[in-house]
Length: 254
Image 1 (cartoon, rainbow, N blue to C red):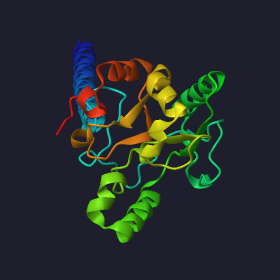
Image 2 (cartoon, rainbow, N blue to C red):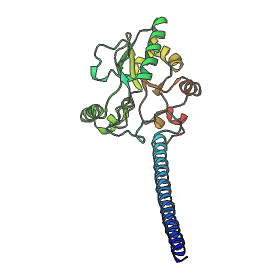
Image 3 (tube, one colour):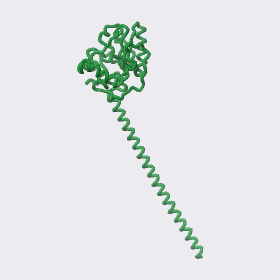
Image 4 (tube, rainbow, N blue to C red):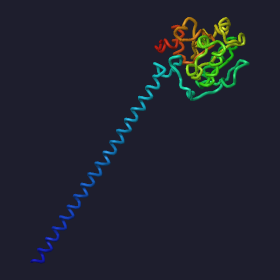
């Protein structure tokens, strides 16, 4: 009888130990699960915060120079950093003037395609356009500006030559254009058939005359009938129809 009682007590003891061990294991599993869940929540929270900061940065970056998506505004008050380079540049398949610098023939790919179409359309109408100068990096523009200042003084230089970082040419979206009728970058180009064609048609291909006459107080630069800027067809059409500047279109008049 005593032997049976001892065996029974031993069985009960073993059961109790097993149950206690399982309880500890279950508790440990719960703790481990809780730790893992907390780690996951922290990671997800950190990733969400990081994404929010990135989005805020993108939003600031995109709105820094423009009030409408996809249009970059560059002028004296909206400058580019010295290391800004367009993502995609190529030399457009158009005729260049004989003295064109090979270092500044490239423009943004989208602008290049539009410029080719514009040149082809002009040629069909009997007008031979010639490209002069497209993308200029910060340091190329710096040399141009300093040379002009040395020649005529800063006040006069600022009327026509943008300071480094304030030049539209650094965007890769601008091209100076003349024709076989006229080969100088001055207001004499306004008297040509080519200019009249450009004024009436460039918006159809996404370009605007960036520095129009009578808007010098808005653009900050003297009239440049040869300077074309690519903004897109619908945008260029609206700007042309309303006879406004890019600053006015973007509601960025200072």
